[in-house]
Image (cartoon, rainbow, N blue to C red):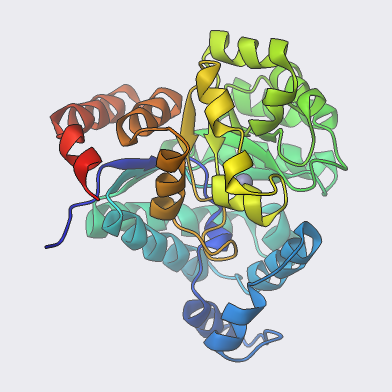
Length: 334
Ligand SMILES: [Zn+2]
């Protein structure tokens, strides 16, 4: 008997980390680029990294093959197919334009590729996608301001917010204040990374300096009781990614993951896969972990919907899909 997956919403996934090895090799060949490893099996083995630093190296090696509009387009459509198979109805993926642009790719090529991909993903797979491009902290803040300006230009093509990513422990949010102001004035919302590789001060900065309405991660808020309470009171949704936190060493084991403490404090948590291929996980696998840690499929869906940056019509449609689903039956599936 095949079990229909319960409805899901994915708010924290990096498109560059969703590319399957065979596709990555195909894109590299098409662009006349060489990867350090020539076979899909070899790539699979490389993905078994052991540290955050190794992860970053791997990330740069894989993202550097994406050069053309067609590449970005294909990445979105591929991943939307995987989301549809997992019962995902809506996603707000991230992509990081600073890296391809620094290699000579035009801003238009990156944004057009991803936005065209979202339109095809809707038609082919029935998954609704919106984007929150990622400003990379490791680049100068002026580049971040350009990311913000381009994100605003693509607002009517599905860009709904701005994110901040990269080396959180080395680059605090303050210098990116202007980038987030540009986004806000242009009608975009803010969902930066904070509270993963750095603690409560980074989360505080994301809230105060960047006007964060949602947090990618946010899990280290548990280190500061007052901050935790504030997140709950203000209804700031945290986009939590348990398996990724294990892989990068934020937690030593999944049993020690702070998700139960966040939920206990009344913080709403969506569940995401962050970097499914590089972290060897999936939206389903992360959802399973979250259920083991005390979340429920229905609460995951509702918390994510509360945090989503989509328009009212899409929100109403997603709410109706959630209301129509028999969640009790989903829970009884072994
Ligand atoms: Zn992330």
